[in-house]
Image (cartoon, rainbow, N blue to C red):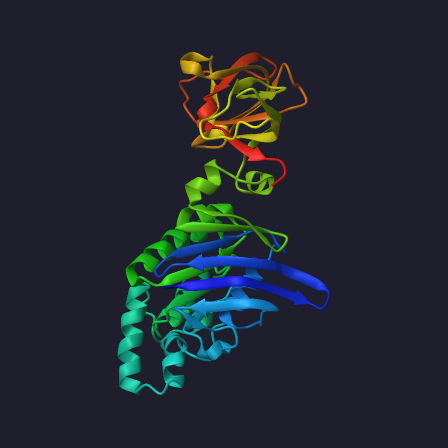
Amino acid sequence: MGLSLKAVEKSYGAQRVLQPVDLEAADGEFLTILGPSGSGKTTILRLVGGFTRPTGGHIRFGGTDLTDVPSHKRPFNTVFQDYALFPHMSVADNVGYGLMVRGMAKAAIRDKVVRTLEVVGLGGLLDRYPSQLSGGQKQRVALARAIVCEPKLILLDEPLAALDAEMRRHMQFFLKDLQRRIATAFLFVTHDQEEAITMSDRIVVMDKGRIEQVGAPGDIYYAPKTPFVARFFGDNNLIEGNVRDGRVETAVANFALPAGSRAEPRPVLVAVRPEKISIGGADGGRTAIACKVEETTFTGALTQLKARPLAAPQTTLLVKMTSDPGRPLPERGAETTLSFAPDTVAIVEVGS
């Protein structure tokens, strides 16, 4: 039955840091809470973990109300950003600490610790101490300590924030693979969009104590429902416009309203992903935009182009394309045509 939050809110005195939220996490799901600092994401994690009491609402897991259950009696474990390893204990003792507290026999603890460290790829490091480990190894020890007691849910509070970029990418794939292998639900908190896209089954996007949107990574990325999600979740070209007579009218271009969109006249934001814009004309029903190139930037696998529409020079369009040394690109100051397919844009409600 998984995790369920119903009208859960949190205030400190007169300051409400979390508006009433409803949220579900299924058994075995990798659910990520994504948002900037102060959005309420860590507050939700602390409420679920029992480290903070809600001001209102109920927290249930597997049909049992945990709202007033203390942290140590909840069937969850937490992985913190700073790892929180005991520096005077070996890797094996750190991982087995929770089992020792539960009164498990020493031989059984050793056997389970060995098997768990094999799962996280640290089978040969049982007798080392935290000071002898790399950042990535410390993170895996913290994960091993979290999973060794076989919790029903693992809470992860920005656990990759202290790692360098290369190790962080490696740990993203490792975490998702680990979660699949142990078939345990993960509730993961981050402010990093790439982490959320890479690892999550679903993403909860938050801002100012409210849930803005919940959905699969592809839905959040290509179909943002609010201006905040459109701006926060990766690069996006946002263009003000109006829906009128079954069409979208903007200063950049006019085009047919995408299928499934509401036809009522209203102001909207048009969100166009940079990789959905191409250099070239309007073949196949694409919408063409005459532009002047501002700059091109080679970033390795991708090349970025910035251009200003001739009809709306106050607007800058960002284009991302696969780098190709054999393909000539327009130079700065040159005029070119950019185009996109109308059915690839997202219509974002301004009042959302």
